[in-house]
Image 1 (cartoon, rainbow, N blue to C red):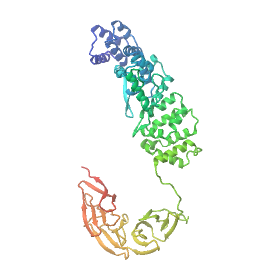
Image 2: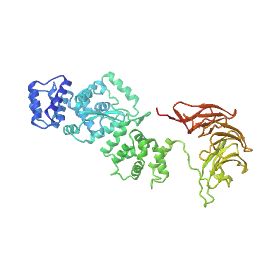
Image 3: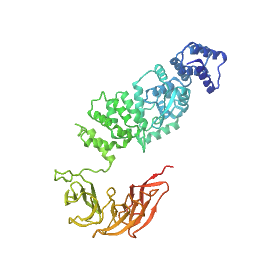
Image 4: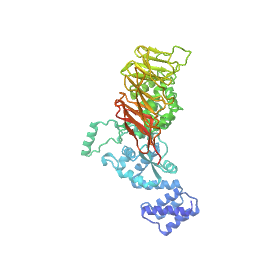
Length: 570
């Protein structure tokens, strides 16, 4: 860094503090950066110390300019300690250094208020057993150039801006400490101790203790509040993201592998909340804390499950329950099918999934293994929940199945490529065979009639008006015919107009309304016919919108239609 950059940093600090160095002081500051190589961090630290109106003394100038970056930061922390006391500054920084991603303002205040040394030196019986708000606010403002605030799952947390500051603070206050990790763990699990050393219950909070605290405060005996906060996994629809993020890290640091496994990695509530709040990558990071040292086969199997499904879970964490159930049903938890932990997870998954379809028993539809059996569709019989109809175009048969006995009770054979089916009565169906429509009595297994004409090869659309009539689009796609089921004759014809070709046909459940799309007119319209009155009632169009009637549906009574529309380019 050259001299101009150092001077610019000094000037910016002078503007913030409203104080300016005299000429001799500025000359000595400039000389420091002419003689030695330095960094912007050192320049900012030196400027902060020289401009501090409380700690600055002329005799300190020579000592400051010869110090390294780490030494300057140590001097800065000493200045802060002179104002607030060493206990408050030290504990705040130590807690921050031992956290995974940093601490929120409220968390620092709670932790300091639960620290006996800080309470004793700062407030004793004042402030209702909590340190004054200005303590952390002043610390944060004093160290503001060296701290950074980032958002972790919606919570702003504070940590060091550069590793050099963390290293310097650890050299001053000590490095990793198991006691501090345990204190943080107690806080984030809701089991923090009060300054008198007695454990406080946070999760539910005893009302009697709360009242007692208020009573003691009136007497001036110095009450002890719930110094931490309730640390449930979720509050309504909001997850406790800080607990979910910090607790596994702290358990790993304290060597509490068994607790990490039992309280987190094998608990459905924790896994579900972690996936929804932080995602599968963060959860896999929790597994990494104990994966190399743990010999628990259930933990390893769950880790493999999350690795295998991480792409899906990254996109949609709500698939966790379904994927775990499917993973279990497919037999991939080898040797752990009867494990108590797996069974407990599956019970929770089933509760979260709610009612689900279970495979009762397969219908044995294979009789002739010499022919490939492919179903074109399964069709319900309206008003009959006990039977279903299957259509097989390759074998040329239509079968009726009874769910109660799981047997086939009717079978029509010898049909020419049956592809589609519509029920026009309790036992009568219109079946599309190749390009022809045939009416069959499924109960007796007899052909009633063959409807006149053939349908379009690519668009064989038809529907049912009533037990007596079928609606079908003509082969040339310019007409819609109403055909009588008993005779097969055409009773009425609906024409859209000259040179208009329809590309869809929808009939509502009660057969009163027929809607077709027109693929020729611009913009693509919707043609609506009243089948009882046998007339066109609407030619619907929206300027700049083309109706894509291949993606459409009509309500049962025919009053509403839903259709996808393509907006024309401007």
